[in-house]
Length: 471
Image 1: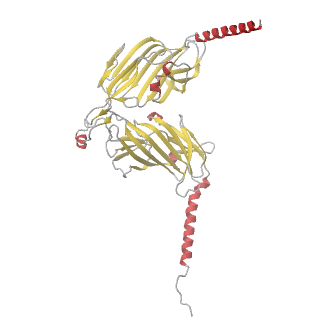
Image 2 (image 1 turned 45 degrees about the vertical axis):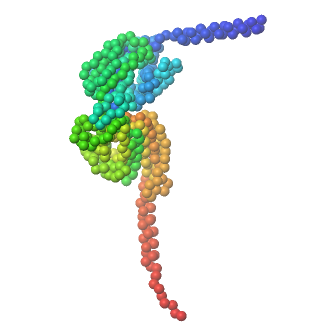
Image 3 (image 1 turned 90 degrees about the vertical axis):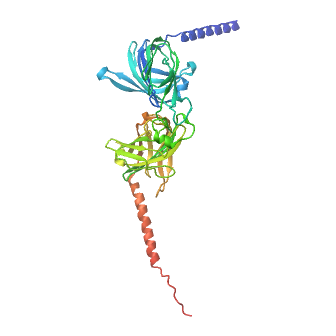
């Protein structure tokens, strides 16, 4: 009997668990639906910008505090920046409130879909709607085809995406626009409701698409914009409390477009600049802070004189030209350095600590940085350093020895990969400093000069004459 009772209990428990799992599996549909979605993909440069507008509605019974964005696994690795904002007001009174965005995981994601979660400021109650503006930046997403071209050929690239927005929600209506740099489009995928006008390809509108709908498309078009990629950039920011901020930037630049094949003709390049090397670039623009001084531009050979500096009260533009034009697959290394007045960037916090307020990112316009390292060299004697950066970065400390240093200078090192112009945001480095340490180097110089002076006097008073001794 006991055995039968135990078996009966096991059967009942199994029945209850199975029915609970069925209830969980057959739970109500998604609490959110997208009433309208509009996506605009800008392919005018090698940095792809995607603007996404979503009008979401809570169709469930309980409040919702987050909205999920879905990406295919082949695209998520190329996302350099993702921002979201909540639209408040209408027309002229419209404003945007930034929202927090973080990567997240969902169990049993179809086709290895990756997700980002947008956290709403206030939960979206049942029946309410909200309009979200999303901007995400893709790098290394344009594939040159053909992969190799000669000096006179134009550069053609592929862009792969979906005509239908990938989403974990039901989308009532959606439209996708793709803008190319020019009207020279070799081919593009035609699906239902496809139209092209000038430089714009339109997919949609599509209505009543279920979650995780996908329709792959390929656009093959001409893009001769400079594919400037900095494989590694090391920026050293050295603080001197004597009034100067010294910046030294080490670049390893490459052209990431279609590789150059054949020989390079300098005569053809200079005589026909519009066709003899249309996909190459021979100069770059670096946007520097105002009041810049002591600017230098050099490489391993020496100083490069082919640069132009324009300064005004808002910014400083440095136009640099490498020793040779860069074609696809070619590389160049160089160093840019300049000084800045310390009073424009160093401040004191209410708690008495000092902090540097400087711009993160790369000064070169329309450039992708595969690996960026920023080294903030603090004055000797600085303590308790800490960095505040508006996005995730790797941080660690180093020690650097310079002239007349005894204990060495603390260096705050910040590292980030896949950096784009949207990362050019201010960051702060806080530290404590006792002003008495400013006297260390002058006292050391004075002491050294004093000892040398005394040694010289002692040397001059020594009698080195040879005297004749009596026998």
